Image 1 (cartoon, chains in turn brown, blue):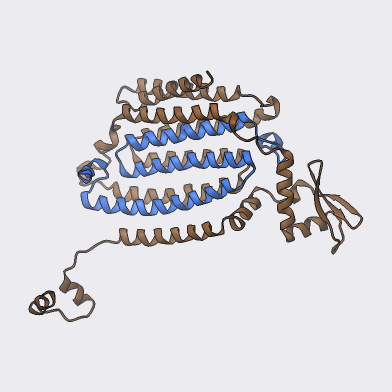
Image 2: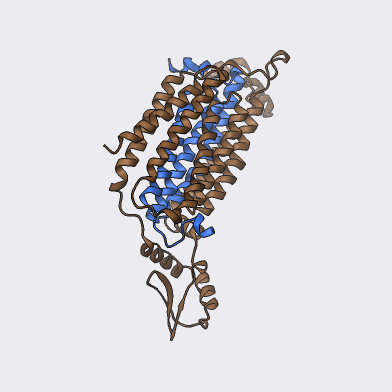
Length: 312
Length: 114
């Protein structure tokens, strides 16, 4: 049965996480960390046993992936087991940075850096501000004391069981369902898609043609011959090198504005609404009576008799 | 060396590659879920939802790379938008709740479910 071993590995990792979260001596929690690492390594080794990985060229990529994956998982576990929320936030920065390493391995250059800027830069700073605001001790005797709700995990057994079921279900569907996916885009499809986009970008096209030595004004068509992009026409046939073709950032930009323009507008509206909402919510609310409100607006105070008359 | 470190334009992803990214994504998601269920500090709970967003980001980009379809990455841009909006609103709410009860403990608000 193909899905049994991944489930077992997930169970081992969950057991380690449970040992970390349960209140107990430091040695037990360290041992739990080792068990969790062992489970995750076992799970990752099983992905290596799947077909279609030619060993040598993928080795460096695999090594980088293992480093980033280990960093992000260790950071995530530290994040949920740290007692001080500030450390949790800092470990989340570690998770974000190692996630960006993973995105770089997936050639998502733009996404990797925008995730760093938006998450590690903007969102985490907001969290830090609120943490600092909320962590002020209630009186001088309790400075630096960790409150009880941060010291002990709440229902660790139930939490880990739910998380293990989730992880088990997800990894099981990965291991059993990946064979049913449509085939990955092969070289030909990737080069064809890139050539089509290249044909749509006039400035880039002109620059590449000028660099390849095609005189300006020559009518050329972009074709793909043997997985290499060529410009053919007017007696010329030149190869467009890979560095002159649109990279992944340009493809994302093209998709964003050409395929999803309405969603882009909606995203802008969502951000604006969130900004208004945050301002309205976080404003210090002072309860003012009706009379005080009218006075602050420069209106005359309504006489009580007049008020009753208006109500009836 | 740089050729070894990343897949070149002309290479297809293997099943092993995709499985590795997806397994990492599901483990990160599960850890985030576990944190959301076991922590009682409101701010850390929201941090755990951000962790689950990160897991989703990895899965989206990995599937986008598999199909050579960049809408996966476009979706990540929208995830970033929603995460930013959520952080602003949720933290404003947390500040409001903290002002009322002077604690970040989620358990002080249990009477809300009655």
